[in-house]
Picture (tube, rainbow, N blue to C red):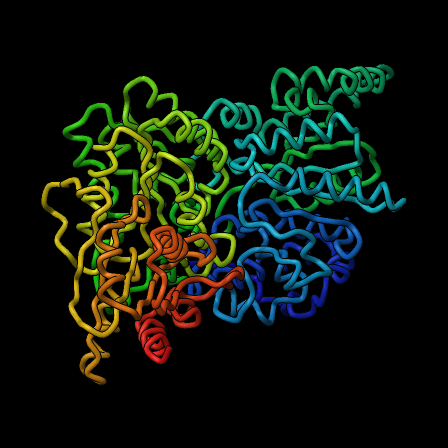
Length: 640
């Protein structure tokens, strides 16, 4: 196991506990920083094995973080860690070592940088990719306007460099010629293996450590030539820009107006410190190309960086997932993937699209079975939607598999390129609702609100596995845009092995009968509503009807109006923001039909706040979305 877990801290006195802030890092030598790197890796591995989290990215940037904070002063200089899952070492080195065991836990520290958590060192909140360069430029302009002279550094992964926003930032930085440092952390992977021409360009074979060694050997040899050595060396240095333009990605960044430095071994602290010291004295836009290994220092993560990008609890000795007692039901993600393959078997016009998340969205099986009908566009959600629109315009049936929180980035494309043209694009939104430990940046809290008011789109949310299967068939049978939104986690155990069958459009179902009060629920809140109804009947003799709406748009309007005549006490339950969501749609529909008079309505959903991180169960309990919260809502509305 010596090749998996660092043992340096077992043979030398630990240094990491003595580091109270990055100020202490600047007092360390290279050997001491290498020991601290081992100690940080052990803390990250031990913690994430219990809490889950983004392991491989955090392990890959340990030396890079130490070298940056040895040269720069993050109490004064401003840092933006792109995506934020690179920032575990940053958190440990900025006063959060003693709290690191609470990573991503309810009431603990976030898995991403957050100024509200540490305003001194977390300079910008991040959770989605490719924002760092634009944000850093804003900080640099603010610095210059204030007459200050600190440095601004953006650390961006090569995966994030596939997104258009990163190049918009680069273009503006170069055009304004601001003093700004961009560190490109190139590990040849983002979440899954990078795709596209830019990825291939950044990962040219010559952009490797051996190229750096060749360059150094060449310089040393020509300088040793008697009499003419220094002149030859000067000539070679003048030719370096041309060399970089031919053999490295340097010409791309130089075209944007950046000084290009690299590539540099991202695990050689001595070289990193030397380069950062030189760059610190430069002015203007500078890009440092750093080569790292995702999962560095932990063999299971090195061998399988995709799995360990975002991982659940695991055994640190082996890297194997911890076995927990409980259900072995398939997740909604699995149900989606299997159903997609089944639908594709009968329809050769079906094309599957994802944005750098084939494993996370469950689309990998489809990719293996139908590689010619699968496209991973990289971290380019806007492009994914418009690309799908182009396919749909030519008679194909694209399915865009994407997390709810990431689809937010494509709002304009959904409106203008898909819905305005009424094109048959199906959006399958994984992680709808509260996702758990990744917190506010990843909760799918807003999709019902931001989708339902767009003309032409059909919006559905299944209560279980069978409904997810059938809603996918429904979406593909429509000749227009559709969205199917489902939660993170396992289903309820219904047998979805049958053939996908389209549902009648805008028709819900009454699942539980009672005469006293009505619960109207959507998606993941249907079964908790049934549980609440059964408990209220058993404990208080209260008759509760539960209606599964199935459709957010079009609403099952006829059925709901009939139920509104029958019941004067109604609870509406959804796992979405109450503002503009499913319950808002019902209230609007009732008002438009003059059916609100005499009704007492209580809404259960997410309040107007960004929900913190924690386990799904904890968050649903805290937000009143579980069966007990729904039961309390029923009891409250009955008192009105």
